[in-house]
Image: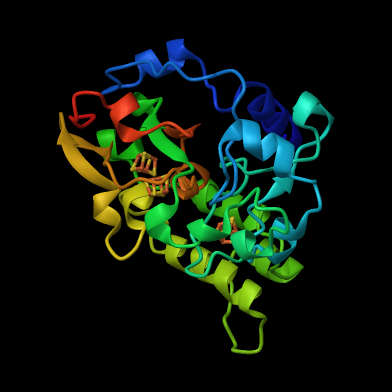
Length: 262
Ligand code: SF4
Ligand code: SF4
Ligand code: SF4
């Protein structure tokens, strides 16, 4: 199932279609990007044409990523086969403060000058299926939405996976601890009102500059704001696939009028 989802993403990512974009609430402008070509690249990625020349498919970035966010494209990636990408439905990027992925890149495909959050721009989050948002109709977060994240977290034990409970003992590696913290924070939303996308956004120091919840009808919906860097954590964690990332797009391109998705 996950593989199928990933293959579909590789075929359409970057590019969920212009039709889909136009149907998302608050999308004012269908960006004139190479929408059918782009994948979400790790932080610091240079322009796509240069990235395709510079990435030597060495996998250094994914080896140092503590969240297991980065993958190498498989055969479905076609021309850019083997290059580093992120599928936010599988695992978003959590914007590590030191950006080890950028520092590990030996060729500059991830630009060493861009190893601070203020320089990171992977893309822009878009609301593609607002009507599915749990907050819009005040639905509680179901167990399955939280359990799903345990299932694709690689570094936890089989009993933690089965019991849907992690324990931070202080003896784990930094990588284990970071990924367990994501699960621990997510647990707060089990059977509660959903504001996962806004509350789990890793943009620091103030996630509300990137995303917030705004009133709509009887409920709430997410509003993407101009500091969003397109890391995709919200896409991974959203229980109902309300969000996606448009790689390399800017806030101005998507939300042309500077208005929200309200
Ligand atoms: S910033 Fe951290 S989580 Fe994001 S891709 Fe780089 S190493 Fe992975
Ligand atoms: S809203 Fe936050 S979590 Fe979502 S892509 Fe933007 S910066 Fe990342
Ligand atoms: S994560 Fe955000 S977009 Fe997804 S259901 Fe919850 S509130 Fe709605």
